Image (spheres, rainbow, N blue to C red):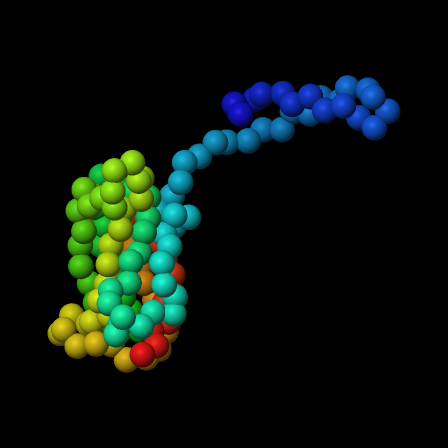
Length: 130
């Protein structure tokens, strides 16, 4: 579809009806493409993978918070990490450990992905159950 394009529809009596509806074509955003592969997540089974479509040329900051707002993990990832040939998604992993290297407790965590240049944010909740 193209912005301003007309769509022809045949009505119930066979008469042509023309609709013109304005719309805007937009690409994917960090927020709409951010997903987690395993939720709930058990850190005893290895790292969990998060995937997103890169929209920031500088990369992203990946942070994990408790629901009361305490940061438990933070790391920056460059925009060049790839999940494989022909795959437009970028993958980042987390092993369920906090910044001190200890496994986090069972519970629900808020995961925030922020573009380093654009400051665009994506958020999701992750349940950790061991």
